[in-house]
Length: 74
Image (cartoon, rainbow, N blue to C red; front, side):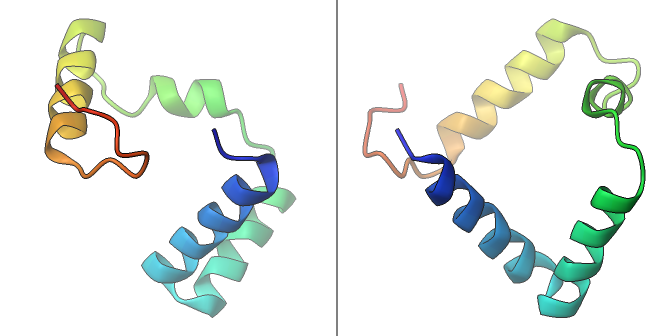
């Protein structure tokens, strides 16, 4: 299991990789500046999809993705 510091570092690196340094910093500023309800945001991600459909898609993505921990993906 990763430590909080490792998760924070990985998350920041993912933002920089996806957005570039400047836009990653802008994203962080936006999240800190504006009220953000993660639970409400998650509820709006897949409108019209059932929990079973989202779960099935997540499991398929997990099977197709490399596993950092080296654990079996089956």
